[in-house]
Amino acid sequence: MAQETAGTVIKCRAAIAWEEKKPLSIETVEVSPPKAGEVRIKIVATALCHTDEYTLSGADPEGTFPCILGHEGSGVVESVGEGVTSVKPGDRVVPLYIPQCRECKFCKSSKTNLCSKIRTTQGRGVMPDGTTRFTCNGKQIFHFMGCSTFSEYTVVAEISVTKIPDAAPFDKAALLGCGVPTGYGAALNTAKVEKGSTCAIWGLGAVGLAVAMGCRAAGAKRIIGIDLNADKFETAKIFGCTEFVNPKDLNKPIQEALVEMTDGGLDYTFECVGNVNTMRAALESCHKGWGVSVIVGVAGAGQEISTRPFQLVTGRTWKGTAFGGWKSRDSVPKLAEEYLNKKLLLDEFVTHKKPFAEINEAFELLRAGKCLRAVITY
Ligand SMILES: NC(=O)C1=CN([C@@H]2O[C@H](COP(=O)(O)OP(=O)(O)OC[C@H]3O[C@@H](n4cnc5c(N)ncnc54)[C@H](O)[C@@H]3O)[C@@H](O)[C@H]2O)C=CC1
Ligand SMILES: N[C@@H](CCC(=O)N[C@@H](CSC=O)C(=O)NCC(=O)O)C(=O)O
Ligand SMILES: [Zn+2]
Ligand SMILES: [Zn+2]
Image (cartoon, rainbow, N blue to C red):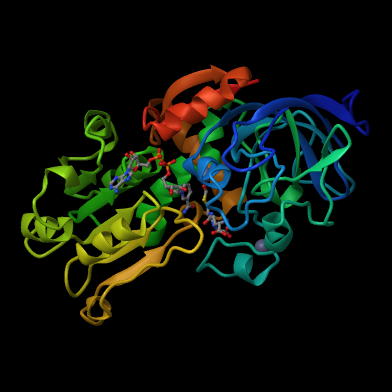
């Protein structure tokens, strides 16, 4: 499908983060055509992930301003650069912050999803050739996580985009860009939760609840949800949590309470907050000899984890996950099929829908713990 706009600079609305800790500013930006190996996408829907807030808060050592945040989106390919073969104009797609080039040593290994082909430039907020495709009033605007979905049009590398079925609705498919695959894959791919096991999850936002969904799919018998906000508990049952602990209700360290509740500790624990204290608690709540703790949450610049090495000597394993371990271009279309076949929940994560003009209100909802995913439509 030929687009009249192909090869031209597109002017459109985007939410610019001019500097950290400031509200986003909706501006007209110029989006350059895709260069060789790049794809320009008309974004239809985007959700907010806590990582957008993390970078906006100034805690991200890679935060590069001014930039266009957003990495959970869906849209339609508007045009493609020279040599692009895997998608074409008109395709329904999801941008991917972990690409899959299928050539690098990470892609060739079955042990990881961390394609590193463009990781360095992506971390600097630029396209693989070192330049950006966004300007605003003549000023260069940086990309974010290789996606920048808080713009009506964005440009991504071909290896950072995947086609999804036309039947997948944009507002739900946007969630396949980050939080849901991350949590679901943390349980299924990273921890490899087994039938009959006991699991505990710190942080019952979208990521933590997607972990619960993965633990349930794997047949876990107990899924303990942990959050400081008791309002999260009722909804968490929909995703598979079987019981709850609010650390505020305890008069002892949570690891002690959980070890007592579970006859020696949990088989699998997941940290989905981004707090180094809860990371330690999650590790130390694991069962001696075999417990596995997975760090999913992203902690701020300068933060470090600690525990007594004896915790590891005595058989606990500390792991981490990025995008749930999914090889992104191969897996996201399959996850979209799982959604269409009613195996994977997505609708239940969308607690709010907002027009683009209200993106700062959506950030407020996220900060206040009032939403799982707020979806913005353009
Ligand atoms: N590793 C990865 O690939 C990914 C990591 N993330 C990270 O996962 C984390 C969660 O993301 P979202 O679910 O979007 O965030 P969210 O803000 O929706 O949820 C966080 C939850 O943690 C709870 N919480 C805060 N402090 C707590 C504490 N001390 N103890 C227990 N619960 C506490 C909050 O009440 C909230 O329910 C963030 O750190 C985010 O950056 C997100 C996506 C991908
Ligand atoms: N930029 C941060 C690290 C942020 C981070 O850990 N990102 C996760 C995804 S979070 C999504 O919402 C990730 O996949 N990391 C892998 C990667 O290669 O970035 C910092 O520098 O600390
Ligand atoms: Zn995210
Ligand atoms: Zn690769």
